Length: 174
Length: 312
Image (cartoon, rainbow over all chains, first blue to last red; front, side, top):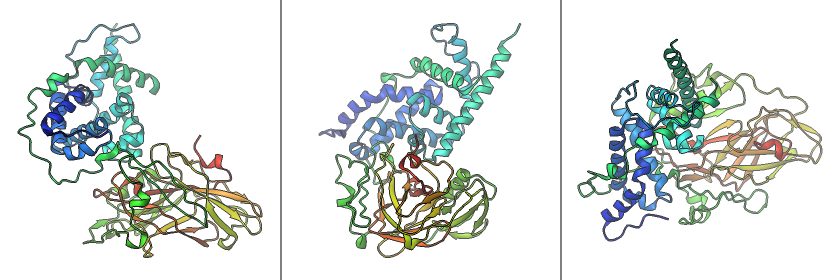
């Protein structure tokens, strides 16, 4: 199951990187909400993984290993620089909504609200609801305890709820 | 707007924005691997999280055959065979003891108190109950890292009946508990050879290495993962009747540092102690200032049935 490190480790790593780059890009985008930042994060994670490719070679699940490196990197980034205001007016216009209940407007409100969460809250929500990890796995990935993950998720959801309500009210002009 | 709706909206939102993420070529463009440094001998904390570290817990209690839990990972020999014999097990190196300050956790709920103590690198004994009423040593005391802090809790389960005493109790390996996510459950059957008596709540537990020193573990009364954390109720053991008890904990992601040889069980109510030999249970390798989650051992209350013991 491990990564084959052939004669040229760079070639071997590149093919692995190619295989997982899209998934890492998507995860990074869910975590950062910003395309540029996501690309940087995914690249940094791949570089980190490459530097420690001896560990990657031993990892049973390269995919999970890379995900972990990326989350680790993301949370460390946050520790280093408390960065990036995510604009409330979200600029990306996506395809039109596929029904009145799931209108694009609602998604946009939620996406904006995600930008207002703390890095760790957002990470916990992404790991739970996007990646689909359980509390124990998330805790391990984030380097914290299960109760912390639960509290990050519930506070994150509470904040989204409040935010949506506020945004809904603001949007609901007569 | 309830949680369920929020979660659904969140899932839809995340899925809808997936398409905006940078693609393979974006991510790979400008990724200069040839210019990257080579691997260093750097310790990355528990990176093998996904590669679920296999735990083979071999215990032989009172001539019961070994009980194994969890499957060995395919690329590793089973821990039981690679682990050194208990007498040569490496002990946690005392090293220069880092001093830490006992934080003030009085008034906190269990989970928060556990977290606060763990964060500074202290072990703990946490009895059943809702809130911390006192700690020993008290907040502000300077102690060596990994020292044990005893908590007193409010709302402990009320005992009733005549407490069971060690000489009357025989402890053997209990039924197998299937670990849900690779944690380390271990169960015991308690059989009463004396007159009818009652056990209420979680016993005190100490795991010791072959040299008699306790493993550096925290013991927390309550359930974990597969093991039920429902409040304790008095369990009456008739003559020749039995009850169950379980230990559970997160797996050791970063490996094992020491193994236990004996398990001491101090029974609630009577304070008498039963010592079991040949109970092998690991202490996890520490990989940072805070303690490894695998070193928090949850001790279930004594339960009447297997069904009561588990989460359903």
